[in-house]
Length: 115
Image (tube, rainbow, N blue to C red; front, side, top):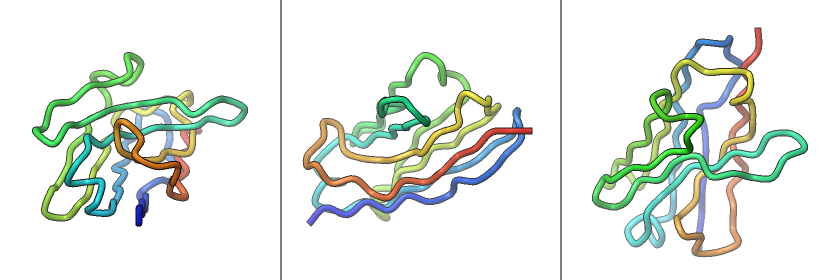
């Protein structure tokens, strides 16, 4: 059974920082690369960042240099450190495997960047 639980979102001013966490089922965490996605109001969900089981990372161009993805394999947890946040980063953030292993998504965590 796939389970994904995101947390750490909130309201932050432009230029601020947040750290998101996602606890995933071991059934996918131990097998797949993990990633963060986001969905802004009125827009489709988009991929943000990937981290492989070996620690290789990749990022959406608009977040490169500002966001850092990491994982703790002992805790089945993936993190997203977000710095220098911009209003356009406002979205619900989700984690999931890459590629998607099932249609199951967590509830996401809301990030709002506003002054």
